[in-house]
Image (cartoon, rainbow, N blue to C red):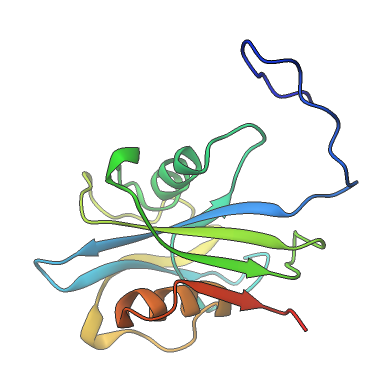
Length: 165
C-alpha cells in the first residue's frame, strides 16, 4: 500500500518486511471523581485474557496516532474525545508482541475531557469496561499498559522498555 503523501513524491517501500507496530492507548482521567476508565480483557481476547488494560489499539496504515487514539477509545468504550485534548504521557517500546513479532511502540495519551457514557462496545474482546476509582485499582494488568499507567499516576518514568535484553 502506498501512502497518500499529498504534494510530496510517493513513499518508498518499507525498508523491512515487517515494521514495528504503532499502537495508541488512552488514560481517560476524571480528576473531579478520582477515577479512570479501564477494561478487562475477555476470555476470547488475543492476549491477556482476564487482565486489566487501558483502551488501546493498533494504528491503521497512514493513520495519525492521535486519530488511532480517538478511534480506538470510541470503538472500545463509546467515549468521544477531541485530538486536541490528548496529551502524550508515556511511551512503551516492546521488543515483541502477539501481533508484533518485530516489536511495538505504544504512545499513551491522557485526557481529562470527553463526552458520552462508558459502555462495553466490544463484548467479544472485553469482559467489562468501567470507571475505576484510583484508590481501588484492580490487580492483574497487561504489563505494557500497566507500567505506563503506573508511571502516569506516580509522575515517574515516561518511557517503558519491555522485553529488550
